[in-house]
Length: 482
Image 1 (cartoon, rainbow, N blue to C red):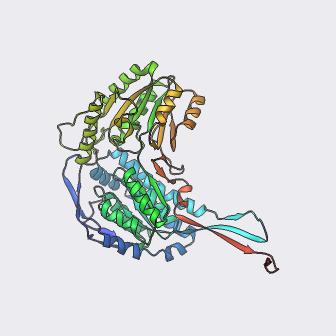
Image 2: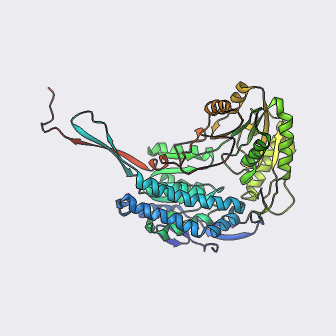
Image 3: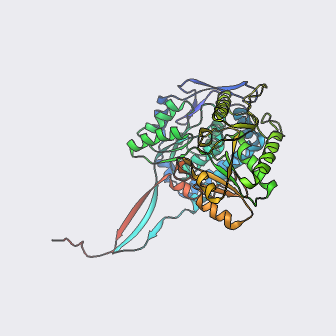
């Protein structure tokens, strides 16, 4: 697949957007690979007004499901070119982008199946009526996705929204729109009516704001930072509009004293350094028992120092560049701040002299859990080692955060694993594994990590409105009191 032309999808038409040009850069080389003219507020308005869902929503579920399954087939057909395009635009390794493309294909297929087998309910009778609960589409929904995993994030919003019978205004991140635009071409090729999907890249302050505020947009699904989520929530409250938000995280990874050493070390390194740490569920707070702290610290430092850093196109790369130089510089500044807080840098911690947006795997120690470094999301390849005395101390520290997205537990004791999994405030808990996902399993956050549910059969319900229908069965007129 070649790099797309300078066009975005507005109301079913491929054309140059009315917004500012967006330069797409290869993070591994710093070389520009494309320029896309982003959307304007006027483009958003045109897209929202054109996204009539009547014809699409009127199709029987199995008819819409057939189209969505076809999208999955087309993604699989173009998997290699989609993965390469995403690697070039985001810097991610080919191994990861192939997995993200496969995830997107599976997402469309899953929601095709979920749609075709979804049931309405005949509710228990409580009087001389037959009562039913049915579902109807919201209408037009906004989907705002981040730059760290575009195609998978796009699919997790587009697929259930379309399955539910809605039109979608997708705003990908301004730095990484290319694979989102390529995905849209496949959605249209599969047979989704053209005006139903628009892809509107551009600044959140312009395009995202216009989508959230538009009177025809009846729901917004957002993945991104907590501060932006709060701003969306305030607008949604004024509109009395539902939102689904997957926000930030500062997830604990817990090593219990009886953990299998090799498995735990490998899992922790993968949990924080895969995706170069650019993941909301990255295991960035690493809790080690005091009794084995030095042992695990030395093994983690040795393992992190061996990880191969390089371009995402190289087969042996484990830690690829960050998405942009600006973001790399932000990560570096936060590590410098950690030093000022008293952190000891065990490995990494310096910007390489090589070209590209690289930052090495970095491990810190010597900070309390209350420090800014341990409380604020860095979104880069930076982990902090934290000792704990016993289970009570561990749970207290792990839960002492405004976030509650994910948690990893490494132990051989299934009783302890279950106990900790229930005590830790997180929407997803992995036991003796990390950062594994299934589209069939719901994903959600606690506290400031989000609202609502993505994935699973529950994921489609967020794009539907529920309606109750009463059928009168009594042949007598309704009694009139008084």
